[in-house]
Image 1: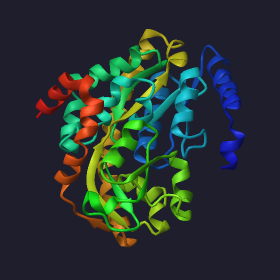
Image 2: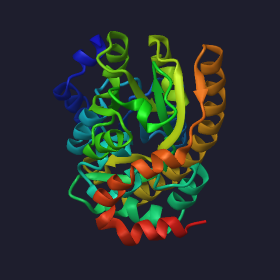
Image 3: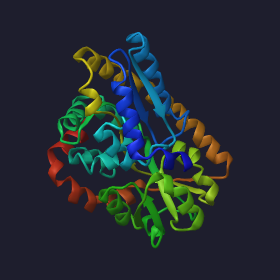
Image 4: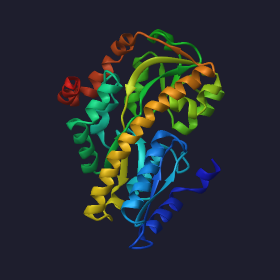
Length: 326
């Protein structure tokens, strides 16, 4: 928290501007993530930095700032838009508030499985949405997708049906669509920054949250008495690796092509690391006493139909195309 306070937005902007303009020969790109060092996303971006530095003989470098030291995702998106942060791995949820087109991937149960989600983002639909992000007024250039896994509920009381969520306050990412999703599932959706969840669980401000096993473990949420993980898989949301258009426009076309190529490689590297991380952290959570509760997903699918109807109406054709992907 102290580091976050010290690195306020103005200081970060000054650092970013200095690194980009210090030398025509060297450009240091500031990369940020809310997740800690060692997390698959962070490791993949660090690897991308090593490749970028090697390919440009040190002319382009990446300096990583993991662990949310530059703020929450909403704040970091804003900093990326103005060029204070140059590269950002972000959840798609908060991006949906500035690039509405990506909200189709934020719909509950839009994907049948993790494999289905990967087939979609690896194909024409994924490329189209990356292009929409880059062409939007958001001043973000999308350079790749990353896995965010399947999100499920973790609570202090076991949840097996939507009825079990009655009266429970559950943290959701900062997007009205997600709050509506939790409300439809039977709970009380509470919009809250990721960095605030631990203390909110600890003090009882919220009764639970929803995320993937690696996030639940690395954020230490399981230590707050949140011992039940209901495997709803209600959201399977790809994540974005974006670059600030401010920094992007300073690159030559050849360097832009190189960054896009390495972004794709980072996507595939992160995916392999992700699968291993889910397996390892699921085992760690079970060893720590977390009970993985199987549920009838159809109950939650049916409960969230009004959300898909409300937010998906404008994406009807795209939703049909997603469903048709094998």
